[in-house]
Image (cartoon, rainbow, N blue to C red):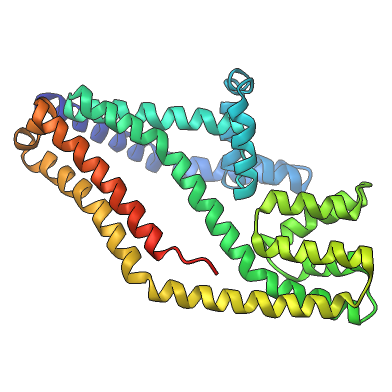
Length: 323
């Protein structure tokens, strides 16, 4: 192992050891101080605020990012990122997320450069670190959207039964907000608050569809808007839409089961070269560094990356079946 790696590992090990010993030695004093702070607090809100174990970690992160956020708030990409964060239900502003993206890229570059002392490999890791937050954001948005789509059928059944019981449309929305969990409860709650604050029902429903970007929810809102203009039995309309949405969810589940092998194949094909390169970099770095130090190796890497992208896109096109 090179000398700089030994020094880095030794420094990290000593730092973690000292932190562990200090935490163990001061455990009793911390517990006593926490109990005294809880007893001395006048209200339950002050107790929660003073007690370190109940402090909200995202608040501390946002306070640390607040100093740099105004610099990035001027860019137009901050507003677009904020829209995506809202759709994924991530409590961050666009400029705060952009700062975290830059930090991820810098950390990826710095750590890999310390471990390998290879600028090209560190630069590639830094670029990859820039894309990781966007990938996680997309995964969070798709996960939330899938969960919301699975709840729309139950929400329509609750609304239809509420309308048959004599409730108004707004009371039916309030029933969905109270009975169902997030994320559909939060979205209906936001819409209900907009209406209470003076917005038109049609405008609030359109805002919800733009915020969620769900085809099933678009179908529901379109039916409700048409019914409010031409009249009709809204409960029966919601029942028919709920049946259609449940069938779509069932068919999507069957398609997902049938195409599972193809999706796993795409995942293996995309991760196998990266994993093999990482293993070779650890086991025998001189052997694999030829690819990065010669023109022929760089050309082969470029061809491999292009082939990987083409293969992934082809597999995704095959297994992506619209319903």
